[in-house]
Length: 348
Image 1 (cartoon, rainbow, N blue to C red):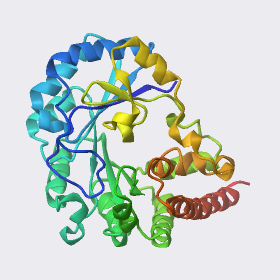
Image 2: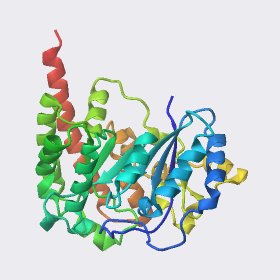
Image 3: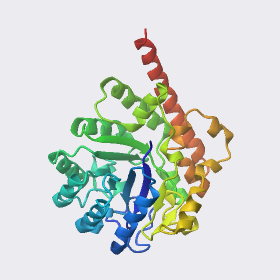
Image 4: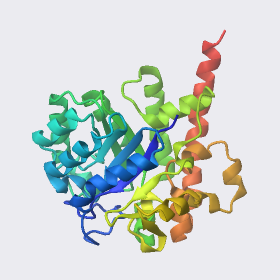
């Protein structure tokens, strides 16, 4: 059974200002500290006897400090076994005190590392050295449940193989993923200028996949999902299930990329009418008019996971649809062909 998934953006504040970020900084206050118990009670009610998998997001959620998260976990303990927690953080505020708290409460950590070369680190405010320092600290703690994402743009596109080598050689116990930027919420010209070269991205991804398939040195969820697809072991993607998206203002929004956009708010999280309205909503992706997208055998990867089409449906950026289609279908066609060849050779 799929866990009940909730994304909660605790704050719009951040100590970085990454070039591809779509969060409007300083638009509103943090989620109220004195409403934490009320929020946890509500989550326990709506998760319908399933494990409630919560991603605590921002802005930068660690700006709320140790005591804020200590209260969250204490409140959750009133419902034993009901909650799984992940914190999305840039890791710049990851102290030993916070790590100890996260270890005690079995918290997963999601972070970003877009470069190992400060000259190519413009898109994340030249923070790579500080992030690597935090990753090393997590290694000292023997922290294994860490997910590191590399967002690829024109700035760092030449470093995809280097990032793979760096991650597998230094952090093989972590999970790593790389993907092109999702331009939802960005200025159209900024988005177009940041898109990586589709051919270069595909070449790098295929090169990495060949090595990964033979050696499997680090977990890469995208490749694992492709393997399941080829083995016909894949399950319906989680994004087809309703995923609650709660903003720092206490409002529920129709999509995590739309949190804070007042045109897409549904209502306060604790109002019963809000949840009823939310459950009637289809993903924005379903409104895309191109029938070939629904018929494409790779749509579970390109549309359901990366939401490039969400960006198009909201912002109307010409050419983005064809760019992502070329990128994903080229890559998946080659990778799936490779897997099927290997399976054919391995099968008597």
